[in-house]
Image (tube, rainbow, N blue to C red; front, top):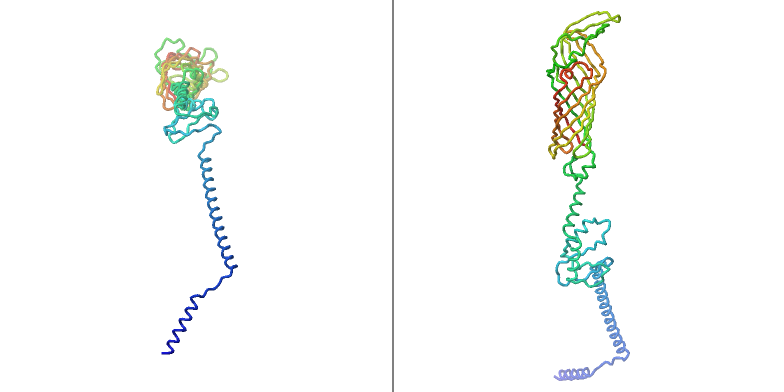
Length: 399
């Protein structure tokens, strides 16, 4: 019991001592702590100031960049914001046209101003640095429209299109201006075939038995016709040439052709030696073929024409030379040839029609009336019937 009381008393004593106990802090320690707190506050203030300065700088730079990007090039025109938000009209000055812009494009732009709904600016020349308003833009547009009418712009556009498409026309006279037709010379290549009648009804021809004959006097080797019953084959000609068109109405054709004149008759072949003495005489059917080379020249007059058909009249003449006059004695191996002198002259008159097969090719048919003059040529359908009906057909390739 006594021990417990001692223990309680000692405990109360210790507690009272500890309640009033206090450790004194040196003054230097408090000064250091205060100085450290001041430095931390100043450091926090500086960092916050730099952050704000950086954000402000970035914002200013972004604003300047936006202004530079969105601003138009002021070297050619000034741009004024449009407050009403309506469609804008581009005013084009004709003096600013360069070599890269065609005149017709400028005229169209002036006559019909282009609307640009997506743009927020109106273009004005640098020479007029005034504020652009809606009323001013409308007045400028009206002035431009007065200077160049829509009809003039349309005419310029049509001319430009015709200039681009000038090579798409057919190489003929249709669809071209009269001035161009008058000064243009066109050339065509011609391949033709010609046939004639083979009936000999004209017995009044004085030289019906002109050739072949055995002349009076010294005898010569040759053929003599002993019967008037002669059969004439159909005369055929083939040729090629050019046709030159000087204007839409007149043209000239020239070329070269080959003609074959066959016939068959009953006659006698007589062979004479160098002394003029008859060696052999053979009577039989004889086939005669004559070969001519000629140069035809014709003048053409175009009556009417369109894209599919041409109708024309023509007249001309031909000079021909007989290069071979051959006789074959049938049922024998005897062949006799002669070389006639002179040339055969003829004249022709006809009307023709040409059907266009394409842009550069035409098929033509030329019926004609032909007369062969008496030029002392071997007997043929031409000498027996000098007035003949000819029928020529061929192709013309236009260059």
